[in-house]
Length: 481
Image (cartoon, rainbow, N blue to C red; front, side, top):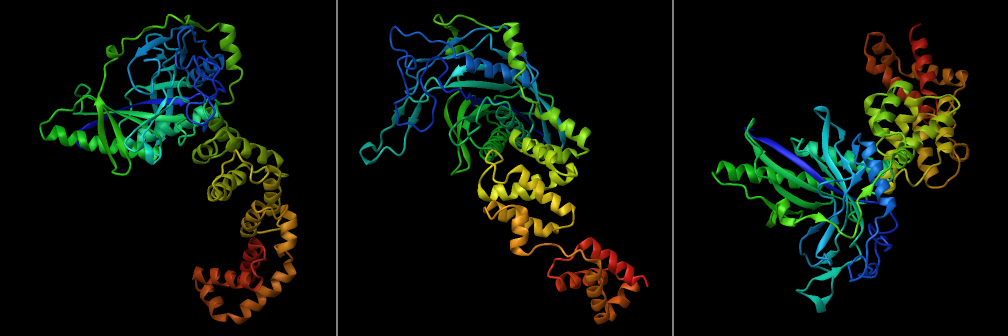
């Protein structure tokens, strides 16, 4: 590895407004082709664009969340290029003066925590969509154009080339994805194209100037992003070690072949001939507007992680898992508040463990409340007061998810109440010891496995209903005689 990998990401986050960036057209996904493109979206003569205030506020929220500078004055520009799915012949974007400059995002990898600097985040409109498949037999060999997406508001988030591996790039993309959802500016639906990444990759000898980069466009899955970057790194190194040169170009990742391939020679900034849009005044953000947006921000993920560690005594691992999404964090906090005897670690274990596994199995998230927080709190209370064992609780959790009733109802229905009668357990223990003299002798000779075997036999005799802590305590007392 005599090569240093240099990666920067440009991410397009579709903003969660109901209408488009410069028109009142709907942004709803899934409408019939070309039914949501209006006169403004396709720039018919005589129309004028008007900036969407909600989109601007979402950009401000993002800038505040990453500790960036919010430019009090920013300018919309026309970026000129010609694609079939760009009806205007230009895209309205921001060039010299973006609304957000700077900021940083902390990522966690196997190497530890690392801060990734951001260059900028700017507002722009999306293009339409070219369709090359699924057009029917009469359209074989033809492409279709759907302009529904034209004009949809985007926030393009540009990082500095601070990442040095595919792992770091994916960690950054996941952290960014979580953040835009957390602060409510983007739904993050990668399948619908609401969050997509362009990966700028180059390689160089350590200490050398930056190498020629390629840009792999519109990657809409974290796994594909990792695979595309790894392929591109290998491809570039092989070319350079064979004495070749890297061509600055735009590439596309093909998941079926697990490779990137050339789309077109990469344009430079001057090729777009950006100039201020004459139909749009500069965007001014007043101090009052900035502060009003700041007040709407929720507690941010890093602040919440710090609080979980300091206030609840949770590990960094638990805190990171709980703050994967805002909904998960809120679920944890609500459940914890409902416990009769607060135990943050217990709730964290169940939310991060059994409950998360159950939701994954069902293909749902914490956004869809499968089990009410009060019901989970009641279940954990029953473990704590000795009514049920942990294993029984897992069975009950799945029953609750199937709609079988409350924890208490399922306990009674299935006969899962734990045996905690000391006298009854002592009788069973005495019977097991009497029938297993050899194992008793082995335990007293220092063989710990014999003890586990005796515990297993007591649990079997009680059909798993005996309180494990009591079984252990009584067995040890009896064996110490």
